[in-house]
Amino acid sequence: MTDARTLVLVIPHWPTIAAGVAYNCPAAVMHMNRVIDATPAAVEQRVVPGIRRREAQRLCPNLEMIDDNEARNARRFHLIVAALESVTPRVEISAGGWCSFPTQGPSRYFGGDQTLAQLVAERALDALCNTLGVTEVPRVIKPRVGIADSRFTACLAAFPKNLPLIQIVAPGTSSQFLAPFPVDTLGNKDSPLVDAADLIDVFRRLGLRTLGDVASLPSDHLLARFGSPGLLAHQLSLGIDGRTPQTHLISDVVTEESEIEPPTDRTETAVFLAKALAEEIHKRLSSEGLACARVLVEVESEHGEVCSRYWRHEHQFTPTAITDRIRWQLEGWCHSTTGPTGRLSLVRLVADEVVPDDGRQLGFWGGEAFIDERVVRSLTRIQGMLGSDAVTVVEHREGRRLSDIEQRVSLAVTGFDPDRSVATPEATAAPWPGRLPAPLPAAVFQQTQQLIVTDAEGQPVRVNGRGQIGGDPAHIQGELLGSHLIVGWGGPWFLDERWWDPARKHRQARFQLLLADGTAHLCVVQSEEWWLEASYE
Image (cartoon, rainbow, N blue to C red; front, top):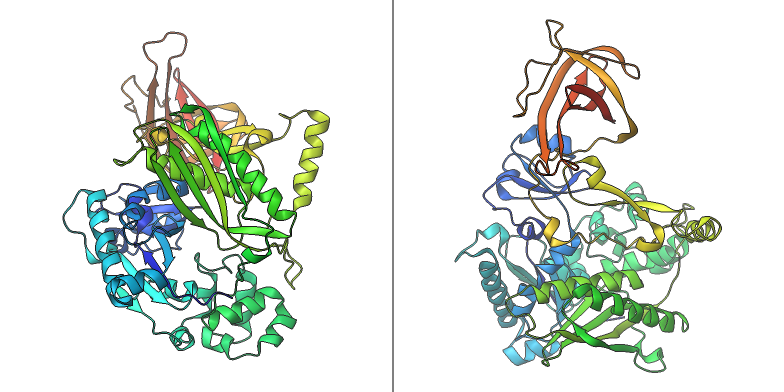
């Protein structure tokens, strides 16, 4: 088990910083229709992480909501990490706004943990100010540093809710420091038990409220009752990382590299090549019953410039997850002021830390933590029978119309991996004037249904060429919906696309209509006719 002291750097509210919103404006970052981060101005309106999208809109009607983008978070964290390279070359990136490194060498070189922590905080603050284009930032988003005997403990020491910006846990005191923390912290995003919500729920129902309660139990009892997750929870509660690097078990250092011939200035070309390297590393480790937990990604340009980054995974990397990190690293490097002056010429991957491949872990409740591999095999067989394009998945993109935002793409192109995330190109992160506000309707009809919408006087409701409505919608009638009173409506969201192209021009106005029976629908007006396009659930 690792017992090296570790420094963790956290920049609070990084998802909102990476999204480019001003911290003095009410804004929130959303994931799966829940708030995961909010600006200080939004928090003042009681918009806090965990609440649903509709509740956030109710509390703050002028709230700007941005979808979370893991690639954007990691890409824009490049400048912060680059500022720490003069302190140590072994900065490990876990996610955007969150990195760590072992302190043994740097602490001795700079004169102790306190001096090292102060230096890292200052370097990160300067880089953050440069990123935002300001000379000072409010305390709530200033970098925070924690140092402790384990990475999990250091993460909690740097936790944004702690008052001091720098917190150092003295050697040998991790268990006392962790004891008062609630048991829910075992499921933090920085924890190896991030996917063990069921285990943590059982702990609560058993009366184990704090990490001290978990640490007080015999480890063999937790192992017998809950398996390896129970033992890991006990180790984390004691301030032990609980993961044993297995580098000594590998027959040789697992390194894969490939020259890019000819050199390219397209990041996707390098990523495509690196994907094959990631799959080869995964294959070599799997043959020895191992998996990669920390990977070193190095990219060189034809002028000899090198971008080197360590990436850490709290569980274990899949080839797709490694490929995503390579893409984020390349995009961050190539779009920075210190980017390469030449084309990309070489990609190198090194499995820097490996752990035993524990495969699929069944919980004692009978469930599985990840997507059942049998589903993947079944879909693969269907592809073999019906063709590679027969199985499709929904991919989220950007745009104004529903058909633009969600598109079906072949499973053969996207893969089927629980760690996979769709990397939306930077160019699509546009304001998209005229787009529908979130949340989007859940049921989208393949064929639109014609409607009759009238005002209180029984006259048809029309929309002119400037998107101005002629009367308030009061009544709706359609074959699918029947006849209903309209008790609320929103819009119009007017679209006038490609007006210069007679063959491809598109003009319509969209409305959200709330009916007396409590249902809500998305309707469009086009060529003076009303159509039912989708319904909310």
